[in-house]
Length: 111
Image 1 (spheres, rainbow, N blue to C red):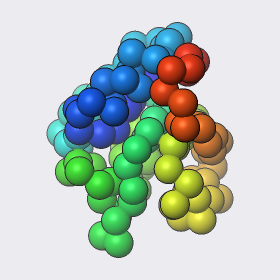
Image 2 (cartoon, helix red, strand yellow):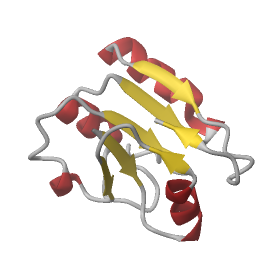
Image 3 (cartoon, rainbow, N blue to C red):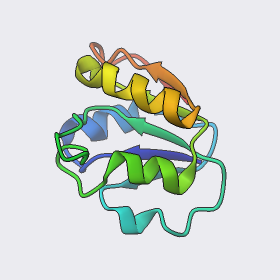
C-alpha cells in the first residue's frame, strides 16, 4: 500500500493524476486514518514540510508516529528542505529514503 500524506489541493490532485501506483493508494491528513493499516506500506510526502513539533505541514500527521505505526519500507519526499531530518529518521528506523523531483508535474511518477 502507498500512503500519500497531505491535504487535498490543486497541486496534490495534479501529483496523484500524474502518478501510477502499483498498489492501493490511501490519502491521509490525520493519524486516525492509519490506525487500521496492517499491510506493508510506503509513505509519500510530496509537498509537506516537517514542522518543529514533528507535524507534517497542513495535516494532523506526526511523521515519527506515522513511521512507528506502519513501519514503512520506503519514504518518498518531494521537498528537499527536510532532508537532514529524514536522514536521521532513516538511520533510526531503517527504511529506504527516496527523493521525488516535482519540478515538472506533467511527467509520470511510478510508485
